[in-house]
Length: 211
Length: 211
DNA sequence: GTCTATACTCTGATAGAC
DNA sequence: GTCTATCAGAGTATAGAC
Image 1: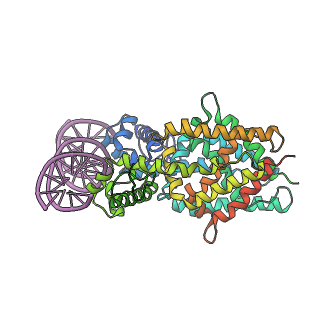
Image 2: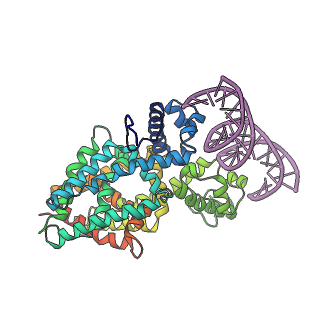
Image 3: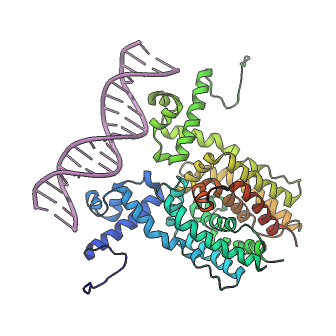
C-alpha cells in the first residue's frame, strides 16, 4: 500500500472534486429527504440544492435509492453514539442522565437526521430492517443488561430497561420529529429543548432513584 | 326539514351507495397514506384497495389532497378525545394515569391513524398547521392550566405541564409510529403495549406523586 | 468528469360514452 | 354514477457528445 496523501477511511477512491461533490450531494439529500421523505424528494430538487445537474448526480450515485442508503449508513454511527457511550464504570443514575441529555442535544443539533430516521422507521424501515434487528438490537440488549445489573445491585429503581430506553428515545426525538407540533402548541417565545432538558432530568431522576 | 331515514351528522347528502363508497375510499386511503405517506401513496393503489376505478374515486373526492384532508379531519376528534376527557373533577394523579392509559390504548387500537398524523407532522404539518396552532393549542393550554392548578394545590408534583403532555404523547405514540423499531429491538414473543402500560403507570406515578 | 438531450414509466387528473 | 380511453406533466434513469 503506497503512501496516499489523505487516506480518510470513509472516502471513496477518487479525486478531491469527487469527494467534494459526494459531500455536497449527501448534504443536499439530507435536506431534501428529511423535509419531504423518500417519495416526496426528487432528484431535481437534490441536484439543484447540490448545484449539480441531474445526470451528474446520477454519476455519483447510480440511483435515488443508492443516495438514500449512503446517507442512512453514513449517519448511523453518530446516531447511536450516545447509547453506546453508556459507561458500565460510571455512577448509574448519572450515566442515564448523561445519556438522555446527550440524546436530547443530538436531537437539537441534528433535527434533520432525526426526521430522516423517523420517516424511515415510520414506513416500516424497509431500508433499515437488517440494522434494527442486528446491530441495534444487540446494542440495546447489551445496555439493557447493564441497566438490569445496576437495578439488581439496588443502584437504580427497577423498571423494564428496554422500555426505559424507548421512553428516552421517544421523548428526545419527539422534539425534533414533531417540531412543528411542539412549536405550534408552545407558541412563540419558547426554547423547547432548553425547557425539556430539566424536565427530562427530573423525570428520570424520580423514576430511577433508588428508594 | 322533512323526515329523512338516517340523518347521520357526518354523512354528506347522497344515496346509501355514495355513503358506502365514501367510507370504502376513506378506509383505503387510511391504509395507503399511513403505509406510504402522502407522496408515496398513489390513486391507483387507493382505488384498487377500495375496489373502484381511479376516475370513480375522483368522482367522490376531486383530488388526492381532498381525500387526504377529508381523512385527517374525520379522525381529528377521535384523536384528541383522551386529552379532552381529562376531568377537572377527578383525582389528579388518577386522571393523568387514566389519560395516559387511554392514549396508549388508542395507539394500539389505531396505529394507522397514529402513523398518518405522525407523517403529517413530520413533514411540518402543511395540512394541519391551522389545527395545531388553533384548536390543539387551545386544548393543551386549557389542560395545562388544569394540571398547574392541581400542582398549585399540592395534589401533583410540580413539573412543566406542557412538557408533561408532550412526554405522554411521545411515549404512547412511539409504540405505534416506530412499531418496526420496537418490534425489531424486542424480538419475537413480546407484547409491546402490554409491557408499556405498567411502565408508563410507574413513570407517571413516580414523577407526579406529591412528596 | 460533466454536460445536453432524451427515453420511458407512472402519476394525477379529465373527457365523454354508457 | 360508473366506466374506457386518454392527456399533460413529472419522475427516474440512460446515451452519447464534449
